[in-house]
Structures are given as structure tokens and as C-alpha cells.
Length: 69
Image (tube, rainbow, N blue to C red; front, side, top):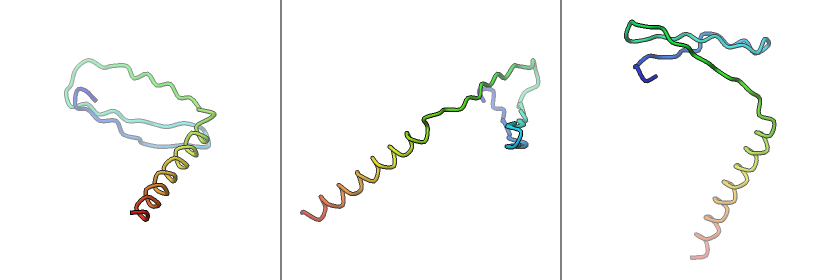
């Protein structure tokens, strides 16, 4: 955090889709507001699968090129 504080994850309750955070601040002073928006990304798995394919292709190409020389 900008003021040197910390955010801790206290508890994760996956069955209730809840997470409890604890915020510790270095300096005493005015309190702030923490606004979080949680959303579920529908197409995140194909994105990760594509990344794995690209990285595998990179290693395969590098390995094949190194065998040619």
C-alpha cells in the first residue's frame, strides 16, 4: 500500500464465495475506504491454454533450431 501498510487474507470461504481481509496501517490517522469489485472472467481458461501452447511452441522451436546448428 502507498502508506506502507499491509493487506492480509484472514480467511477464504470458497463455499460461500467470501474472503475476509485484514488491513494494517503503519501510521495512525484518518481511515480510508477500500472498494473491491470481484468478477468472474468466462474466457480465462482458453486464454491460459493459448499461453501454454505459445510457450510450448517457443521451446519446441528453440530446441529444433539448436539441433540444426
